[in-house]
Amino acid sequence: MLLIASAALAGLLAQGAGLPAGWLVGPMLVAIVAALLWPEHPTMPRWGRLASLAVVGGVLAATFRPSALPLIAANWLPVCLVVFGTLLLSLSAGMLLAWITRLDRRTAALGSLPGAASGMLAMSGPLGADPRLVAVMQYTRVVVVVFSAALVSRLGLVPGTVPHEISTQSLQASSGGSALVQDPWLVYTLTALIAGLGAWAGTRLRLPAGALLGPLIVGVGLEELGVVSLAWPPGVPQAAFLVLGLWVGLLFDRSSIKAAGRLLPVVLASAAGLVVACAGLGWSLAALTDIDGLTAYLATTPGGIDSVSIMALGSGADAPLVLAVQMLRLFAVVLAGALLGRWWS
Image 1 (tube, rainbow, N blue to C red):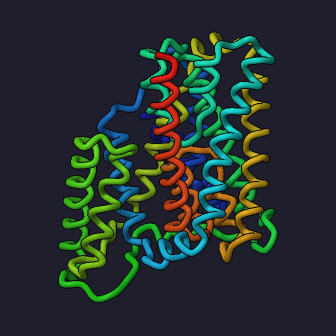
Image 2 (image 1 turned 90 degrees about the horizontal axis):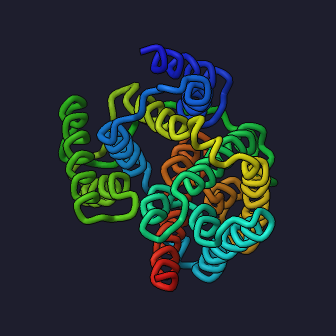
Image 3 (image 1 turned 180 degrees about the vertical axis):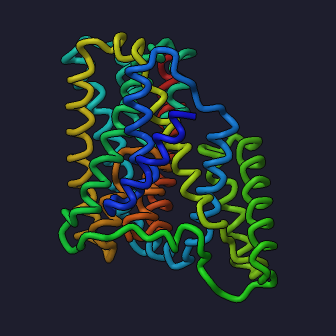
């Protein structure tokens, strides 16, 4: 109760300060502090995280624009080069980290692959890597990505963009258009059912980030057919962001930090360097295509797809385009992890 109340207060303060994705960043910071100071801290139930990802998938489906896909198709070569460039930069950072710290290559590689943190963590044990160090590396990078993206978005540090104030309207309003269902409460109910069904199907089919991608795919399909324009009641998206922020923050604890030991400063430096290198790829993507600077920056950040999507929703970037590029990289990361696992076997 104390943790949730503190997280809600932090979310309100972050939103009041105009921080993009404040309902994710504020609770995440509170959870990190609580996890490090409170040895017996609670953990986020799996169903809570899945429900929150389903809500975020519904929010993204409501903001989806079909024009995002032709834009990627028209610039497929730069986008593919950026996706695989991010993958190579991440693996290079992992190998450099292994060389500097004498960490085993399996742990370093799985800890450095971007955008599939839970998948890399699940593969670490069977492949002989240290799950604790993989978790520290993965979620340290996620935290660095979220805070750096929030600062870049808020301060307008990307060339060609200006600072954006967070907008709560896009978090619950649909993308518009004619739909068969118009009654608000019926729309809310159908949105919840679609999100739940999509999350169930996505996890059953074992899609990467299935609880997020399932509602997104089902919701976009129904929106394009004109059946319903998805919308959430006010406050529901913010509650989902709060839960996801708590989930990321509570992954840290004293035992994992102690296991990292002297590696933590090097891991932080590696994560920061990777973020800067990927920002260079984002700048190249913006220079070679018609994609704006902020969207290109968020599309190439080496963070979790759920956190970056929330950041895009709250920063004024093109969220569907960010999601599309992140999804391409997510599948590339999962494929790379599977190939590395087969090679190590």
